[in-house]
Length: 88
Image 1: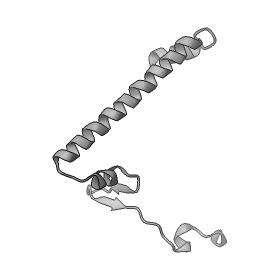
Image 2 (image 1 turned 90 degrees about the vertical axis):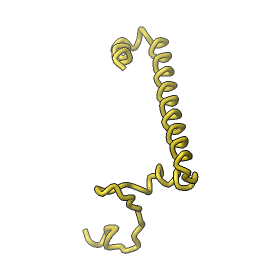
Image 3 (image 1 turned 60 degrees about the horizontal axis):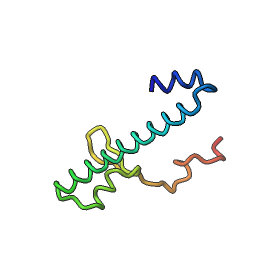
């Protein structure tokens, strides 16, 4: 990242170097994410969880609260809770 910042300061002269460095950083980030997901799935399979349970753990609709309990996000149909325009 330091090398990238340095090259950004000299952008007009080092376009090709910067382009290659950005590609390398992107590849490394994707590989890191892939490695994390593989470890996570392997761990889940060792605990004999189903893929449905594993997907639910990573989904954005589920969050853990202070007690480390999974709290589900639910939509509300009450207009007062959503914020009605007439209240302004």
